[in-house]
Image (cartoon, rainbow, N blue to C red; front, side, top):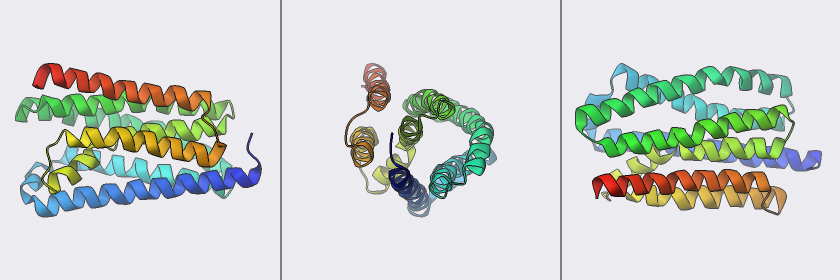
Length: 220
């Protein structure tokens, strides 16, 4: 169990990570839209809606850490309960867009990558809620962090595309970023690898490995 002072420090670190992910995502997609202007033709209402709810999640992720650091726990809990609506909107719109990309553009690899992201995120989100109800705060924070990192592949892909590298590099980038960021936060907060975080990280990495295997079978 962390001391109150250490709890505040852990939440501040998580807030900084959340703000960093939000800023990175905005810059990545903004650069892609400005440099490859042809993609703007695909900004249909559902794509715009999906972008809005995904950015809302990143903003909520950072804000929840701030609220916890400021000890505004009642607001934190209320937003946590309401987040199920946001998550449902993210998943439904994301699956629809992923399916459309596969059907209309023939890019089923994008469909697989996006579905894998939600296969990671949704169970970790549920686990995070479970940990919060049990007042197991550290695994709660890490579940939300690892789950959110799983959603970052499209942002990595936009940067990779802007600098002219092949799309699969985004997956190669995702794995070390997820592992290093999770373990760094774990060490700074707990000074050791806890069992819950180990298991959640193994699950996240396993989904990536399975995803890569599926992509290799169908597209290589």
